[in-house]
Image (cartoon, rainbow, N blue to C red; front, side, top):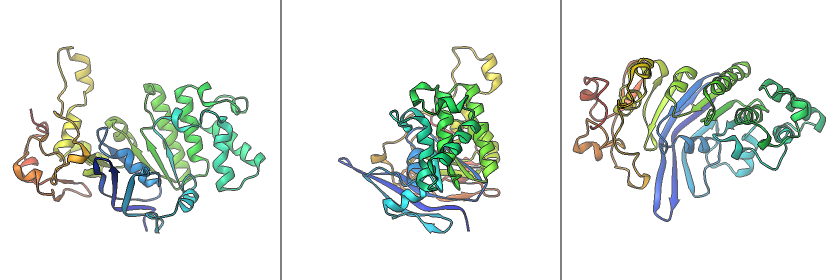
Length: 336
């Protein structure tokens, strides 16, 4: 039995403009100790997927499909039941710690809170555990800074506090949503190394959500590529990066500069780009969401739902023109 399994997970947002499918047919399995990456442009549904996995979808959202944790169905749970799971069995490192941490509560008490609520630890024991967590994530002199407020820490330190809070109850699944946003490269590496060490130590499963291709390539075993609210390509990270199949995935990889390009490129030279923008969720075509931006688009792409095309191993992608795409150079991805 998988630790976490999503089958046909869907999130519909209900607004004054109508209903928008923010996430469509999201399916994956996650075993203990497994690592899964989710990549895509802003607006593709990555963060909404994370919120649905945490039972934190907006009030105007309807979540359907199936989501099971150790066989327990989570879709349709009451808020009280979700609160017993959230933080204890599934935890999340949010994208921006300054907004995720409560600015009027001292950081030590915020790290203690899940220990007090979920594990019913007495105050002294919860404080000792919180200090140990803050020490483990690299907060200097945690005993002295235990009663400090979030604004008194640097961005990297706030992210470390967020990690300590998320890991307080040793959850089964850790979701990291853009965990290195706004951090410099050195701090990014430290944070990612820390997450990897803690996941390995505690045998947790990790879902890493990012738009940073290098971050995903170096830190996960399997990955999903999202576009327009749906998964367009999936497989092992090695396979997807070595042989990208979907035109959108190819476009993302082509837009990433190599080290040689960085060293020799002139300022006048431009990287390849994918023209256009992510489609409005209220105006998604009934067929392939990438239709129109793709170099291989034909009329049927906008109307016919693309089939799943299996490749080697567990690598697959969704495309109605797979026979043409797979025989085209990988550098051909988007309309000029």
